[in-house]
Length: 247
Image (cartoon, rainbow, N blue to C red; front, side, top):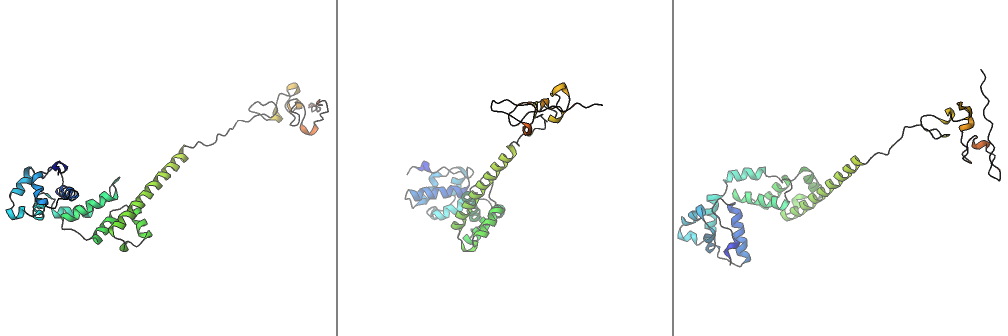
């Protein structure tokens, strides 16, 4: 086996439990059962010094080597327990990594049954995810693997829902309201700021004259549609203008 597959361990480069876990995995995949013959080859510095202090019988047993390394380099079990109790799912962290870290901390202070680990796992999830998990099924009837799968699905759904809500909010905030115009426009001369009844475009420039009135039937000036008398030739007789006011 290529020993470079297992990183060297000096007691400070990484967590001892993590390093031992990787060593065990590589040996399992390579079919190596005598782990006690592999460990000392990848120890350096203080970690190798701890190994050297073991008795010859202890060096022949991987469990004893592992216990000595954990005792020398693992976090204090009381500290590990405090970290375990305070552990929560971090922003952007997967539930698989979160559960693995709970297992690691539990092992450091003496281990915990899966039933207790399940409770700690659920307690560290966001409140919204906990509510969905509890509403959707009876958690006490689910093992740790089922809880993990269910939590994955719930958090993925929540993430997609948050994304959709954010997108809808963005669209709502950036959709322009239809433009409205407050400009008054005359229907007779099509000029702004006055009505047709006050239009000065009529004959003589008088307000109220029909010279500026436009027929909605034929489109010509001088009469309204109710008095339109267009003939076959298309000619239109203009309606008489209103009589001038005499004062």
